[in-house]
Image 1 (cartoon, rainbow, N blue to C red):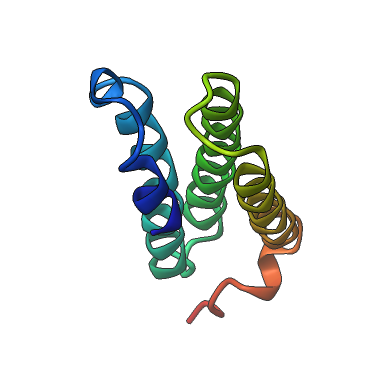
Image 2 (tube, helix red, strand yellow):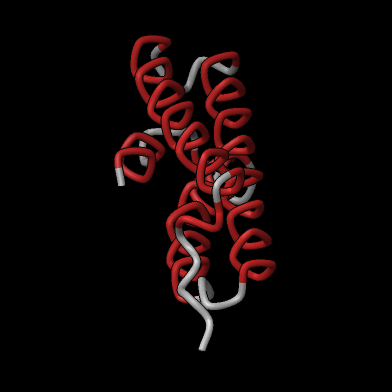
Length: 107
């Protein structure tokens, strides 16, 4: 939500470019995480969705770097968000590497 709020100040001509991309990627992180959680009965599906989370979080970080480079976002705000995404990435990679801990037991 913080990215959504911050991206409101991006230039209008970025509406269908950077603004849309950063919003889509950041929203996709939580949406894919929710989907992964519901698929934890099946380890491969769970890991696949977590891999999507990892990719979208990394993409969000790239768009944050672009926003700073274009002068649309203050470096400090972007740095704080970038670090939050580093934390998300650490957690997700840990979940992938130890998926057995998260997957529901079979019948």
